[in-house]
Image (cartoon, rainbow, N blue to C red; front, side):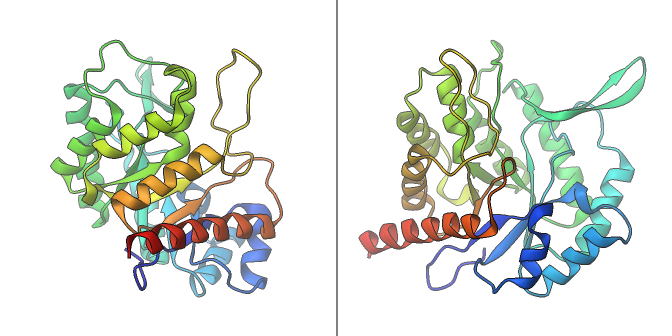
Length: 289
């Protein structure tokens, strides 16, 4: 982990509108995270930018298309592209989601284009363990697996998500990317909206050593009765900040990322959010000394 003097390392998600900022602005965050698939092309302006950014910042590669919970194998061409990017950038973290994306229609492999939730069963756990082990072996890297926002629930789930991820890590040596906003979204959609209690219970079920990264994000408030959509389109909410304090108390100083993907603000606004995270860390660590 990137930890200095028991202080958490804070980064931001890097999206296309801020490519110029990352190369021209003074360094104000500790790392940046990008979606791996956006840089699979061999050559080009995007990869050139990332290579230049790598000279200034550690890079976290966050993938969105592996589909580790899929029953179909991840296509070999995808894994080869990811490995090539990994060798070019040498990321300090590599992450994916606990979901499925690949399926078959009339014998043809198709990609969903979204992060589809899975039932938390022993069968799906076994499948995901096999996929994670295959990817880690091929890349020679440890994966960090993120909990996801879901808009349906499965009656056959007999493990909750935190238990599922804890068992996955124990079997494969992977770690957890704890997205606190995703827990909050699922709480509002399925558990009556007692967000702080949901986040607290989730955090307590994860082994202390299992969490290697934390994501913080915001979601838009829906009209009454509508599903809450994890759109990453606004600042981190008060409930998520509260959960972050709990997570720091339990898991200690782990790399933390501010995610903002839609209605992107100015670079300075992202930096302000990162600074808020750093202030929370200082406050929590001060109480523990």
